[in-house]
Length: 413
Image 1 (cartoon, rainbow, N blue to C red):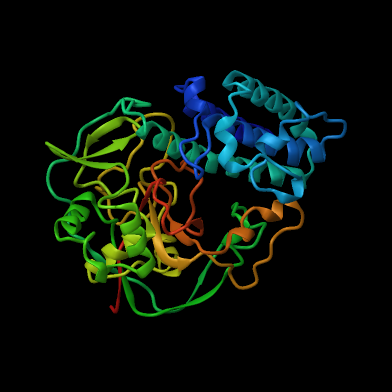
Image 2: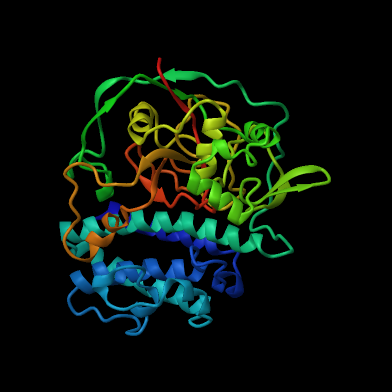
């Protein structure tokens, strides 16, 4: 129980540490329907613990506010009606201070209850901690988007260091295994947490292929742009080309061309592009077009996972706490974890034998298995310790406000 209490307290503290620089106004704004206000993230995770642990597993628990579940339920239909996602930025009240008081009350109730929780409830506590770690990354990416729209281009944290001079090291192509392999999380009880969509573990057939030892860099993306990559329709999927034309996309998200070259907006303000760092904030459409231009392709998630499983998932440039959070040049190769999520060519669909859990918790992942693509490996905003080789992230192909990049693959040995 002591481990569960420490784990819960550690996760909850990191969320609040990340939000500390924010004013009430910073934490209230919602810059687009895909993003959520910071104080909504702070409250939603308290609602999760209050609802699925305190309400359901602690006799006599009384909700902090009877009308707040309507505000902070995300997408759990079985939990009843809720505020529309696009309206979250209209919540000028409750204030940020009110939300932090709510978190403190839920934390105190959890601390009193955790010793008496059943194994089933403790499993939900771990699910909640994993879920809050996802919201830590979302909090950062949503604040990045909101601050990017402010003409002052304010920094959340100061920049540390400067771009590395010179070009990145040449790509080394790694031969992948071929034939029947196994991927996916191992069965519950193996001692390692996994979300339901990561299993069941199953066999997959791999053909001869190679993976790049590192992600595509900013320098390589600049070469793609200089060669007319955004103007050549033959490189693009039909939907991607239509999206590029409609949105007027000419560079990765947050990039801007100025008198002194290309810059990118970051959580530490706007700075020159680091040529040796992994490219970031590109959509699936852009990633696929780049791969075609490079006479390569995106890896399948099976190819990616079997290669990444040979490496430490806690390594790489992952989130340790507040600070200068951004992709960094790769000095150790191969690196499969951190910096930027990697688009794969695999649709987000269920593995053979997948079934959603009963009740509201079953709404967690399965119902989103439509029209989205899988990303692997985590990013500079993914909390260290949260990542594993079987982890499946997923977004729609036009999304790019997350820390999204790519690694190349090619057929043959």
